[in-house]
Amino acid sequence: MRVLAVDPGREKCGVAVCGPDGSLIRRVVGVESLRDLATQWIHYYGVEGVVVGDGTGSRHVFDILGSLKVPVKMVTEGGSTLAARQRYFRDHPPRGWRRLLPLSLQVPPQPYDDYAAEVLGEQYLGRLGGGSGVAPSRP
View 1 (cartoon, rainbow, N blue to C red):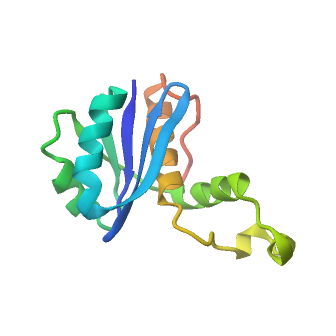
View 2 (cartoon, rainbow, N blue to C red):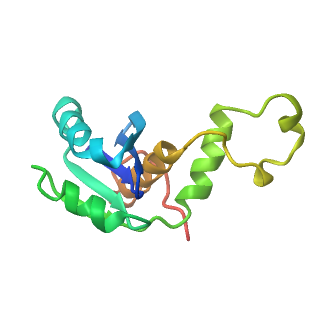
């Protein structure tokens, strides 16, 4: 099963397509572009469902995606932001003097909502039992 995971926000959203082998693609997009991108990715990647995190802006984003041709479900975001930050720094380790600071004191220099969407998708698939093998995090 492949899902389109969305980490909602007021102005921008993280979006990721997740499947049994992990994330296929992820991106940060403006809310105004979300529906068009979701429609394209659902068709192109064969997405069977959409999961939307229950955080800031979730109701608005849920309404935007509600008319898609696949089921849309709200999921708990508990722990996704911290996990996303860890993944961001795994992929983009700090350089220069920043590498001397503990990662827990740093904030990524660019939006990392796409990583949060990836975490949401993997957690959802893990709960279904046939997903990426990533265990759901505890809030």
